[in-house]
Amino acid sequence: MSEPINGNELLALFEALSNPHRLRIISILTSGRKYVSQLARAAELSRPLLYMHLKKLEKAKIVKTEMEVSDDGKALKYYTLIPFDFHITPDRIREAVKTLTIQKKEGKK
Amino acid sequence: MSEPINGNELLALFEALSNPHRLRIISILTSGRKYVSQLARAAELSRPLLYMHLKKLEKAKIVKTEMEVSDDGKALKYYTLIPFDFHITPDRIREAVKTLTIQKKEGKK
DNA sequence: TTCATATGTAATATTTTTATTACATATGAA
DNA sequence: TTCATATGTAATAAAAATATTACATATGAA
Image 1 (cartoon, rainbow over the protein chains, first blue to last red):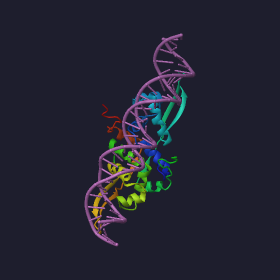
Image 2 (cartoon, helix red, strand yellow; image 1 turned 180 degrees about the vertical axis):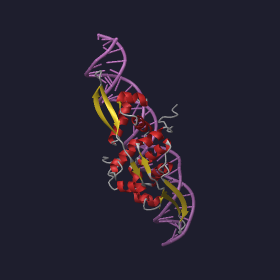
Image 3 (tube, rainbow over the protein chains, first blue to last red; image 1 turned 90 degrees about the vertical axis):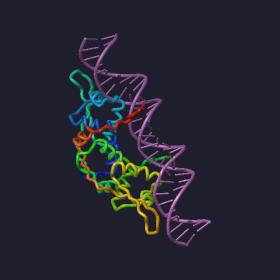
Image 4 (cartoon, rainbow over the protein chains, first blue to last red; image 1 turned 120 degrees about the vertical axis):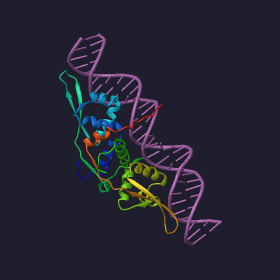
């Protein structure tokens, strides 16, 4: 969480955190795990849109998910916050950049 | 730098850090200030594109700028890294979200 | 005067991100 | 069977971010 971090992972982290809805989702999840529909109501987002945001948070390893079946038989997809403690300084960024391979437009024809 | 941070400022910070070129720019500036053309060569970016990226870094207060005139009379615009040390945890994000007023599509007609 | 070096930006194009609409399936309760 | 609750996603639209092109000005040196 606080160790030297790979450049691509660090970038994915910042990308995940660079949106107000996703910050709010993180905020909501600090009070405990929520299943998708529940989270959609709390965040006031449509499920398709919420899924998109959750994918970015998953990619950055900020949330994890698990399927469960409720007492009344409904399938529930729970999202849980993965605790983190990032220490961001210029030196850490300089170190991370050494392993940064992501290029915008990479693979362009 | 490490104190509780305003939600909008935190978002601007993450937005500034969520691009590989900008991370590289920060990395380059860790070795000392550079003027724009110098930085453009080091980062292998066109000046117009570099200006766009520098604006985002300035907005997030990650860099500052000062104009100077070189010995041979050229105007030089120097960019300097502002030291920072951010501590990012779920609780800090939850606190910051309370003061988050930025909404995508805010002000839509 | 011409060249090489700077800064500065407007207009446009391209790409990516964000958001919406419209579906599908499955479960248990009424 | 119908209703309310879930999950899941494809197709599309809209908005924002990124990138390029084409200019402008100014300086000192050759």
